Image 1 (spheres, one colour):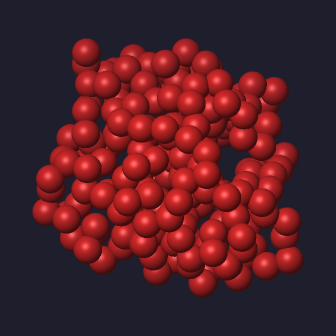
Image 2: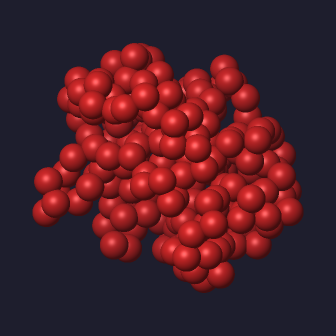
Image 3: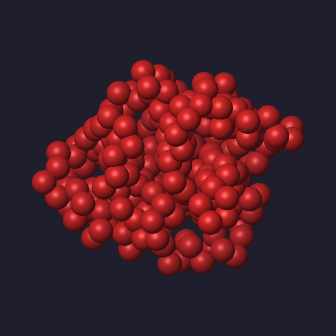
Length: 220
C-alpha cells in the first residue's frame, strides 16, 4: 500500500493507478473490478476493516464489493441514489449505453449486495464528510476532510497517466450520465480548494490550485 496522508492508503492495483481503491481509517473505499478481490483481500489481511464505501455504481468500483464484504463481514455504504443499483445488480441504470460500458458490465461487474447505509450530504465516514457530487452517476459521492484539505473524488475527476502528461480530466460523455451536472460538481469541489486529491483513476495529486485551474477551463 502507498501512504497518501494520515489514515489514507492507496491499495496496490493492476495496472498501478488505473483502478484505485483506498483504505481510509477502517473503511475500504471502492473495490475495482470483480477480478481484484484476491488482491484486495491479501492487502487487507491483518488490518482492522469495518465497512466498505462505494463512490458510485460502476463495475470498476463495485466489482469486488460483494466478495470482500462477505469475506470480511463488512457493512456496505454508497450514495443514496446509487443504492438500488448496487442492491439489485442493475448497474446499467447508472451508466450510459456505450459499447465499452456494456463490455465492462459483462466482464467486470460483481454480484449485487445489500446496502446497509445510504449516504447523503453531510454524513460522516472515517472522519470525512460525504459530499453529493452527481453527474457521473446520479448517486456519485466524494469524501472531504477539511483538516488537511484531502478530497476523494471517485470518478467526478480523473488524472491521466504520467506518460500522457498527468493532467486532470473529466470522464468522456460516453461514460458519464450527465456531463453538465458532473461539471457543476467539479466546480463545487474546486471551491473547496483541496490540497490532496485522490482519484478513482490516476495517481493522487498533491498541491493546491490544480482542481481550481481545471474547473476554470470547463464550459457551462
